[in-house]
Amino acid sequence: MFAHLPCPGTLRVFCRMSSSCASALPASLLRSAAYVGGSWIRSSDSATFPVLDPATGTELVKVTDCGPVECREALRTASGAFQSWKEVPAKERSNLLRRWYDLMIQNKEDLAKIITAENGKPLKEALGEIVYAAGFLEWFSEEARRIYGDVIPVSLKDRRALVLKQPVGVATIITPWNFPSAMITRKVGAALAAGCTVIVKPAEDTPLSALALAELAHQAGIPDGVYNVVPCSRQKAPKVGEILCTDPAVAKISFTGSTATGKVLLRYAADSVKRVSMELGGHAPFIVFDSADVDKAAAGAFASKFRNSGQTCVCSNRFLVQKGIHDVFVKKLAALVTNDLHLGNGFEEGVTQGPLINEKAVEKVEQHVQDAVSQGACIEVGGKRSSVGKNFYEPTLISNVTTKMLCTREETFGPLAPVIKFDTEEEALAIANSANVGLAGYFYSQDPAQIWRVAERLEVGMVGVNEGLLSSVECPFGGVKQSGLGREGSKYGIDEYLEVKYVCYGGL
Image 1: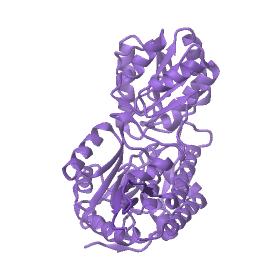
Image 2: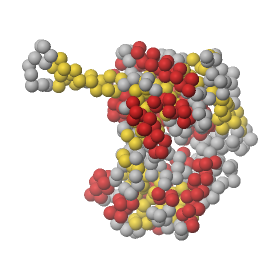
Image 3: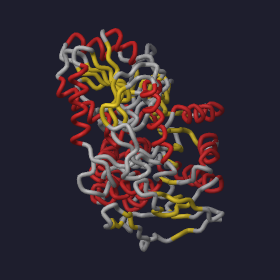
């Protein structure tokens, strides 16, 4: 049924750079076939889809386009592997995850090149993602040995009450393109530590990172069928997603992506009452109060907004600045954007801002800027497409923004910083909490009482107080309202892949 392939060690791809030199992607980690049951396979109909470099539009490689047949095979394989993997001692699972982590660190430069090629983010930023991604494997390798149960005192002398924690089973892992390695390891590390097996469906824009991780998992000795990857094209994604969320073999669904897609997957999960984790859309407010250190606030806003060219789920999307310091804050942030951001191909030295992922992403930023300007917003910096390439948009700062503008009602997911002036704390909180999502929120203040009030009243799952970057492997990641369900990372992340079983032991 499937064409099983040897490791394609001769495959070599070059990424064209604007400086006319070439950066070779690592042949040892570049894979184009699906990974199922420890083997590299092609689809039954030999279909493929292209992976493009968003900086140049150049085709990097054609990847196997999996469909229902490959999904069913992956589910069968993962189900079989679960029967043995769940019995593997925690220490052994821990050692295998640690070995996988070590291999990621040993190959971090090559893994970063793959991210830059398929995602576009600057190489330095991609390297940071790899270190962050590997950290989840390290963290959960340690947590694998800390899955504790309980003994509960009961009122009757002849019985004992026990609580066991057991793996839920086969988990479907559906990940986005903006962090093509970290969003996989954050989920898979927890799942494998708990004793689950997984099927990863990576984003169609960035499957190469998931497949590179599969190669390293294979080298680390992760047993066949425990980690499986089924890449597919945008055209096949709806059907593949449906199968991976409705098949009876699947016990758990973990998804990171848009709120709209998350709702579809939740409907799929409802029919068979599957366990779900959902990390969905964000629309993060960034509030700067009059008491704030303005220099630190501007630096925090700069870091939060323009990382990965604004294409992160926790980056600030609405900047609310109190009237007493509004003008000086805008001036300082504008200076940072003008002087410290440099657009270009992610492989070029000194580049801090790569391309957006595709033309559609650029069009959304353009629409938000045009809508704001048409309603009276003022462009402080940027405000147009860049001549660097078709997927590049200038880092943009706009002021005189109102809550009626699209950029304050929708998540932009691009390099646009809209600033709203406000009068009172109550007004700022009302604006911040008006969204139907609540992933992350940030604020700057030096008033201790205000810090407590605002941190408690912000309707988000994560709060940055005088800090613009808050993600950490040790801390829980997730949102409230329509930003999702469950938490990832931290000691809480492994609970998403465990069932709690109560055992009443009588007749003593």
